[in-house]
Amino acid sequence: MSLWTIKQDTHTSVDRIAQVTDTVPAQVRAMPRARRRKGVSADAPGMRAALYVRLSRETEESTSPERQRAACEALCEARGWKIVAIEEDIDVSGYSRGLDRPGLQRILARLAEFDVIVFFKIDRLARSTVDFAEIMKITQNEGVALASASEPLDLTSSMGRAMAKVIAVFAELESDTIGMRVSNAHEHLRREGRWTGGRVPYGYQVAPNPDGPGRVLVINPEEAKTVREIVERVLAKDSLMKIATDLSKAGVPSPGHSSRQSTGKNSDSKQWYTTTLKSLLTNPQLLGQVIEDGKPILRTDGLPLVSRPPVLDMDTWHALQDELKRRAGAGDQRRHGTSLLRAVLYCGVCHSRMYTFTSRGKLRYRCIGRLKQRQRTGEQGACYGPSVPAEHTEGHVTELFLETLGGAEVVRMVEHAGEDFHPQIRQAEEALSDLEKDRYERGLFKGDDGAKRYADQYAKLEDRLASLKDMQRNAKPAGVEAVPTGRTYGDLWKAASVEGKRDLLLDAGAYVEVAPAKRGARRLDTSRLAVFFGDEGKLRRASADGKDMAEVDHEVTAAIDLEMT
Image (tube, rainbow, N blue to C red; front, top):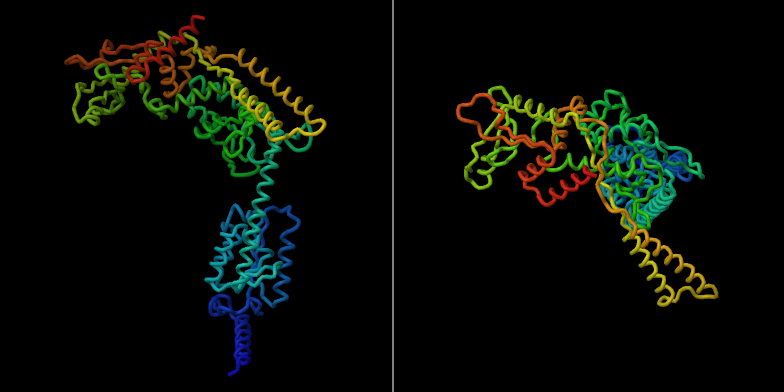
C-alpha cells in the first residue's frame, strides 16, 4: 500500500468518525481519545467546539463579549466545527482568579463532550504561563485541542504549543504592566485626597470632589456620632459585648451592612459583634489616614498621609488604644459572664490570684497556688488553698467600694505623645548632603543658571532645617493629663455589666487579700478580707503579680502629682 493510500484512508476514517458523531447523542460519544487520535490536526472538520469568552470589565470595548463570541463563531464556521457549548466569565479577572473561574470550570468539567476549546486570544484563556500550561496539560490528557480565533497557532504540534507559551508570557507581562499602572494611578489619586473606590470606612461617605474631578471621602455625621459615642462608652469602662448588643438592638447599621457598602462582601444583617467593634476602633482611618494593603501610606517625611478630616482627635485615639490594649493584656482579659472579683481577690498566704469554683451548687473563690507550685516544682508548698463564698464576698467588697468611691468622679488619664522632629531634621540634613554631592561630585547644576538653581534649593533646605531645629527646641514634651469624665463611680456602677463593674474596681485600684479561715468558722468573717483602693491597692496588686515595682512607683507618683496640681 502506498503512502498516498495510507493518508487517503486516514482522512476517510476521520470523515467517517465525524459523520457518526454528528448523529450520536452526547452521552454515547463522550470518548475523547477514540474521537481524535494523537497527531490528527485540530483543523479536521466535524469537531465539537466549546466557546470560551472572558472579560475582566464590561467597559473593555476592544475585547467585548460580543466581539469575542463573533470571532470564535466565525472560526468554527470556517473550519466546519459544531458549537455545542458557550461559556462566559464576565467581570472575572484571569490573573487574580487563576483557574478558579465559573465558566472555565464548567468547560473543564465537560471535556469528554468536546473536541476543541475555542477562545478569542490566549490572554482570554489564561493570564499567566503557569495557568496556561496547566490548561494545556489537562486538555491534552483528555484529547481536547485548543484553538485561538485571532492567533494563527496549531496547538496540536510541539512548535505550536511552544509559541503559545511564548505568547502567554507576553500576556502575563502585559497584565503585570496594567496592574502596576493602575496601582500607581490609585496611589497618586490617594495622595491627592481622592477616593479610588472599594469599601467605605465607617464614619465616612463618598462625595463629589469640591476642588476638581473625581470623588472624595467626607465625614458622615450620623456614623461619626456613633463612633464617638462608642469611644466614650469604651473609655467609661463599658464592655464591648454590651456596646455591641445595644447597637444591634437600636438597629444601627453595622460597617458591613448593604446600606453602606455597594461593593465587596456585605450583609443585610445589622448585627454588631465585639470583633466588629475591635476592627472599627483600631482602624487608623478614623484619624483620616489613608490605608493601603492594611498599612498607612507614608509621606516623604515618614509620617502617615492624612488626606481627609479625622473622626477622632489624636489624644482620644491614644486613650482608646491604651484602654483596648489594657483589656487585651495577659492577665487582664475579660470574658463575658466571668466573676466580679476576678483579678481583684488574692490569697493572703501565697499572694496568688483566687479563682471561682462551684461547691454544693454554690459559687466560691479559692486559691490554686498549691496546685501551681506542684506543677512548677513537684512540691506541695505551704499554701493550703483558702476559699470564701462568692456571694457574701462580692457583696462586702461592693458595699465598701460604693461607700468609699461611689460619689467620686471617674477621671480618665490621657497620655499626650510628645513632639519629636528629629526624623525630619535628619531627613533635611541628608537632603543637604545629597544636594552638595549632586553639584560637586556628580557634576550636576551646570549651565548658566546652574549656580542660581543650586543656591535657591540650598537656601530653602537650610531654612527648613533651621525651622525644624527651632521647633525641636520648643517641642511639647510627652505627658499624662487627668481628664474628668463628669460621671461618678456610683453612676457607672448602676448601668455596668459584670465585666464593666470589674473594670471599675480595677480602675479604682481595688485589691482584696483573703486571710486563712479560723478553725470551726462556718460563715464568712469579713475581718479575713483586707480591702484596699487607690494607689495602695494598685501597688499591692502589681507586687502580687510580680510586675516591675519601680515602673509602678513612677506611674503612681505621676498620678499623685497630677491630682495635686
